[in-house]
Length: 347
Image 1 (cartoon, rainbow, N blue to C red):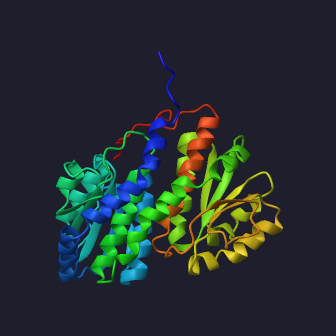
Image 2 (cartoon, one colour):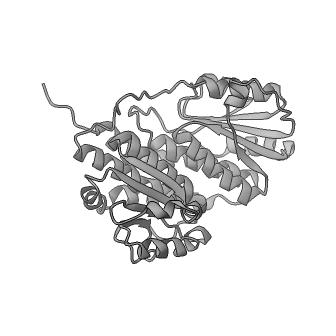
């Protein structure tokens, strides 16, 4: 009997992401235009986003898209206020967006149904159009990632990000042509040769920090989750602004910092943070285009020229690959992390 290859599924699903992006773009059009028209007519006064796990980071990304691109107040919900405490808020005039890979978690289904009863316009964004969550919401968007077999979500996450970008961009009536470059950017990130060296450098690390600003902050959050669930290390994610408000004190040469730096205002806001990390002698891994964060200790290079609001679709890929390679180097199987299942049921 042949020995199973550790991380075989994750590796294949990471490599599939350029093709998934092509599929998302090919599927965008009529359904997005119809939904955008519904949203423009409804003219919601606010947007609420609900999700768990990896999808929660897609929701955080959508929060930036909505607040910056649409100028609407936008918040991340605590589903337990509805499912555990039985709150009955007035949600008339609110758009409620539920984001889930599987569409099967009971708390998302129940809270979405409760939000609909409370007057919200409800939308589910899933990789499962026949799921309970898709049925609970008035409207549904399929992210077209295809079956995802590994427990650690990769391709469904980037498909969620791209779908949410297309939704918000179409809603505000802006051109979506910039997304056409995403599959090529993703392929460059999948093919980049610097991941194995960084994985080897951090193979025995048991704690690290991830950080970023703006649109890239969800990338830092998702990277920390991937490293925790696949390599079982202690990874803490901070907005770079919050990092400066106290957690910086714990950073030293023995706790590496992964800093995601984008082209644009968010990346510019990282400059004083990178300087402070340098002053503390921190081991900094920059996830950035070659011309940014040039004094980092090591680098996971990203393609240059990505719009800041689209960059998170690509930024996470070298970090997915890093989590994969670190787990395999430790003799762990990222396809099936201990104690985890593909569908997590919470209430």
